Image (cartoon, rainbow, N blue to C red; front, side):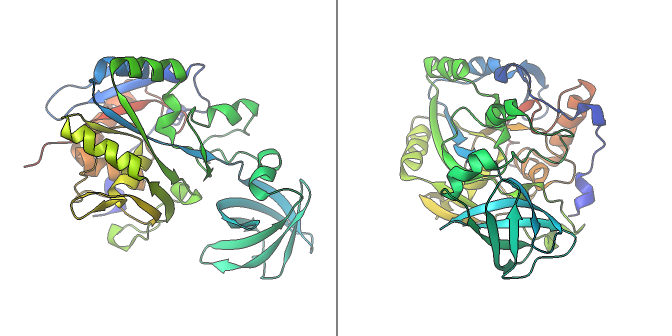
Length: 344
């Protein structure tokens, strides 16, 4: 299977550059199994589309302002994108500079303080920050929000709220779990009234989510690592939902990645640690019965994942419909309610 198998042409004007005024006003394409027709709805219609006893699983990661700028003591400019907080004022980062920094080198940060290069781990560096607050707290006012590269503008104050889910709690992501951005408090309240249950996992979305697949032969692709936590409370909610014939519905591909990584011995088990799972057609997703997901980049691992779930032909048919109907694409764009193709 090749990367080029997942290419499609997208008019540039369909890439959403900013969120809508209201989170749940985004459009929602309902994609049932073939040959049923697509329907064009809105995210605010979800209570009508779900059933009492269904379980929505959200990713409760919180995005950190992870982009920093500075200069080496030699004077060269540096851009830093934090990949993961490591504790003890240390972080794993990507560094953009004309020359790669050396271990022991110091970066003077534009917002005050400095960072020492401790070493290199593949494409990443480990930095120790010398700042006057705990790193996580310092980044809140010193860092800049790392909007995705396809958003052609600088982040503003509004993005600090809108590029964050309303249920974000566990600090550590450098990109938002974007399907969750569509949910606001009034919608969550209506879903509760409908009898829909909620559960949470944590997956700290890393900068690797924006890295393109660099090989055409997908068997040679090395998937990036991300930290996840699937707790015992969520596992019990899933078990209870299944026992009562309810559906488990993932809000986003990050939730699917976390749940599939926590499957053990045929069932979901509590798990905390790193995942490097790569889901593409031929893999059968068994942890969820449906998912809400945004529209993904051509040739991306996320497009490959949803193709594994609903079938590549069905997904590409849905994307053609979305383009024809002028849906908004990517992080600040619209969403799909996607169901799997039946086995057989």
